[in-house]
Image 1: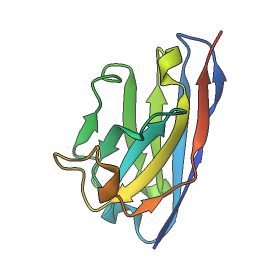
Image 2: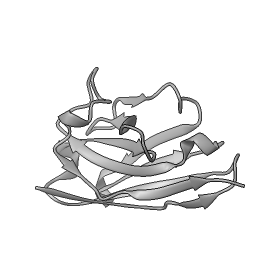
Image 3: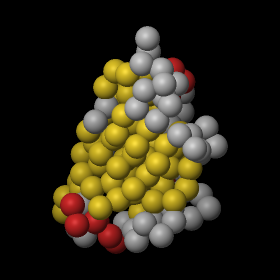
Image 4: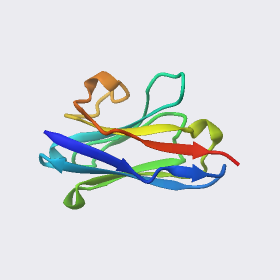
Amino acid sequence: QVQLVESGGGLVQPGGSLRLSCAASGSTLPSYAIGWFRQAPGKEREGVSCISGSAGSQNYADSVKGRFTIARDNAKKTVYLQMNSLKPEDTAVYYCAASWWCGSTWYTPGKYIYWGKGTQVTVSS
């Protein structure tokens, strides 16, 4: 069992940065890959990024490549999503989720076992 809690969301101007954190408790974090998803009003949940348990591999959605960076600190049981050059279209509730691996279908919500409750990110001037 893993409990996930997101933090770090907020209101930021276009071009600004935020760093989201996903803190885990319960089972050993290195056993799980962690994905970040987002969901804007009226839209489906979208995969943003995924990092393997060992941090040996990372995946990104095309829409965030070069702007977002995922990282993890297993000693702190925390996964981070550094978001730079934010755009209004990045506005959404951001969720972290745990799975056994990222793989080629890392962006599929159904493969994730545990979910946090989300943190709101709003990009607006």
